[in-house]
Image 1 (cartoon, helix red, strand yellow):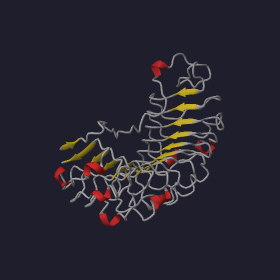
Image 2 (image 1 turned 90 degrees about the vertical axis):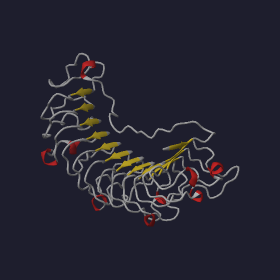
Image 3 (image 1 turned 135 degrees about the vertical axis):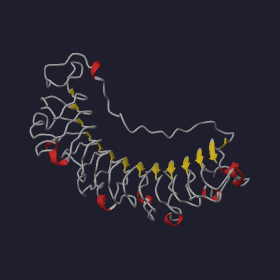
Length: 342
């Protein structure tokens, strides 16, 4: 690859984004002595008496939770079912429920369990056997993660009263576009939605206008609807890599959104560079079929005050090279630090 470094900036832009291990957790060996208000199979440290750590203990059931517990860690076990009554002491006080990496299915979640948790703020249910989401009644819910399950439907209305919900992550499931119609309506505070690694043929409809991050990579999306992004005036990051996008499915100016900072269209079937807004800073177009470097897609006008703010541009794996760039490119792309060709 040819790496062109323009002279104004020498900043390498990292695009790695951690999506795991994002809850505050201390290994069992660091918990210290356990307090008296605790289940015998778990730890409840004196210096954090509202937390109960039951993780990585080969448990096959959810233990009864004592009164006063607000943070419950049950990840990395062999749990297959949740029996009625285990949360009776904390229905209106439990805030965090971490159930990642177990073997729980919908059929084995009894009534009178999660459906009674009225104060829950975070529900992490990744790497289980769910076929549809399990949603608590809590209006305080702000983060929902059901990654790496077998979700095939997400019924409309489940999140309609979740006015504090800011983040939903359902990547690595089996969701289709028809299965999520109206699924994410409700919260006007939602900032992040990740539906990547599913079976979507179009971007999810009816998403909140408050979104700042939308990830839909690794699906079967062929087009972006006219006006779709116009309903997301705060969107900063859009990832659509590894889909089936073609030029005819990209309406003129659809990505010309002033708020957008990152746009990933890599690993698609585009033959031309789509029009972007001059405020965009990171554009990923590698592994497409682009045949021509069209500067007007990046800069409509060039002057002392009008130019592209792109810092990172990837075009490797296409049919353009450094020699494809017109002479005036350096003026348009004056703040770019990395432009990568093949």
